[in-house]
Image (cartoon, rainbow, N blue to C red; front, side, top):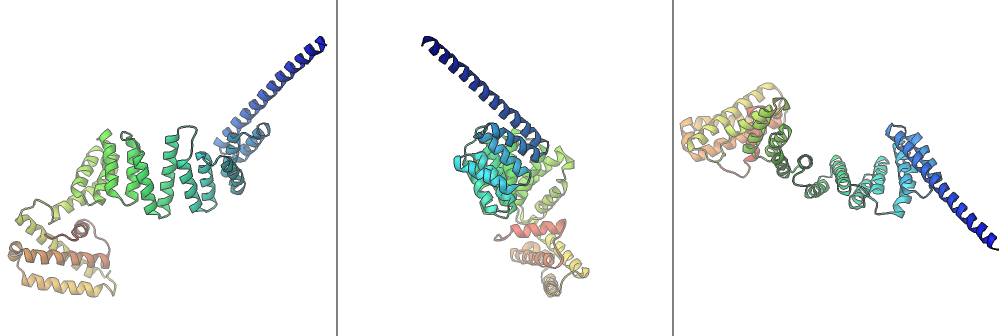
Length: 365
């Protein structure tokens, strides 16, 4: 009996050792096939990767990591319906997984379901990530911002970009610059400028950020600040292509009669100069033959108004009378609107006048 117990114990020890060795061999095969699958996926062979991951699953059928990689191989191979079945099964077993939600978003997008993709991207932002959760969540939010902007959902994009800005570390200049570009694309140049200036606080001489800050200030109508940043950008790197924008900004600053701090004489000079520029454009527009039958009567009417104004108001009277100055600038702005509609957007000083007119709404000289 003692011998039987000894033999039985020995049998259990041998069996356990064999079982451990078998499981270790299985784990080794799972790892081996998984590494091969990742390599094939990285080299652009998703069909081979799918077979590799399927082999890995035969040795580790409950390995969620391998199931997820298999689904990603199917996605890369364009087998979206098959990938979806794997991903949905994974999502049901772990609905809080950020990685699974991200893959479901990609699958939904490739199947043409944008709303569903947006939903899963939101889940991925809120989901759990085993590695680098902050970075992964930011990357997903960046992807969501891109998707929303590309589909014209500006209001939704603005909310996500605001979330992106809130989660961006103050000293991470590249991320602040990236957030600023999103704000600019979403039509929020003021908020974009805040982000670009934060990036410049880290590196004040980065020419690209200087140019972007200048562009944001320009779109926000802050031409003084735009001139500051654009001039610095041109000094740092003339090849950036910011020179044309800088010249336009300087034309606006040099011709805007509403600019704060101007003397009465300078206001009058600018109004007279703007009117002369407007009249020159009006004549050129009429002579070009471009105006349509709808815009031509308006241009002819303005030409007559301009003639009447010039007969009625001398240059000396224009310099002395605030009322005449107001009439002159209003006439100029009417010409700007009419010529823009009749002959298209202007260039150089004409474009500067369009910007001055746009910014002047609600103001008086």
